[in-house]
Amino acid sequence: MTSDDRLGQARYCALADRVYGEPRMPAGTRDLILALGWVTLRDPRRHDPTLDLWARARDILNADDAHVVRLIAADAPRYEIDWHAGPQGCQAPMARAGQLCGRGTVYGFTESDPVTGWATSWGFCGRARCRPYLETTHRRAAASHEAAPKPIPNKGGLLPLFFQFNWERRYLHATKQVGPFHWSPPVYGLSADEWPEAPGQDPPQAFPKLRLIAADGELIPAARPRLL
Image (cartoon, rainbow, N blue to C red; front, top):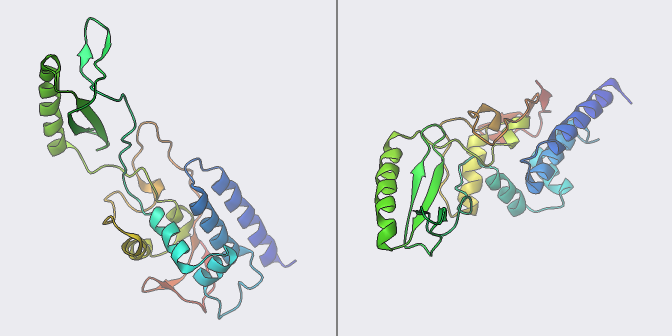
């Protein structure tokens, strides 16, 4: 085993430890990162000047191009509202009962957090006794949208944790192929380690990124990826 092989083995083991230790890592993203890491660090063909890294990673995954595109699109950094968080049904408090109304909702809207920009969903029934709380909450929620910052992403952004690449272009291409939502780069950056800390979300651990050599957003097959 050459010194280059030993270094690649050590780096790949560190990469795998970091990937498996990331609690937010979906299975598909994990597999893609490990495949790219293998092609970059351990693959016996990694010195082949004709090797296309994405094609080789696709082959290692035993997948087609469409599957790889879906994996990349799924990692596009974004904020997603958890519509199932919090109480269900009418959220007007019942003072005598010491609980929420809980009846089926007729009116629904969101309120934006002034720090994270994250949305809290509200729902209320149409009963007259719940209307004062509905109106007060709705006025506050409407004002919150004007003052709130752009929401901090809570999904994706894991591929840039491990690899330097033109991810904005790659994400744009993948999300257009997959649809139907329109994706644009978040103001906080593409990599999850660049985002501000948010309550209940531990910041990811730093990891030395592998550089995927690229030209105009595409890999150069003749160039071997270098470690930073």
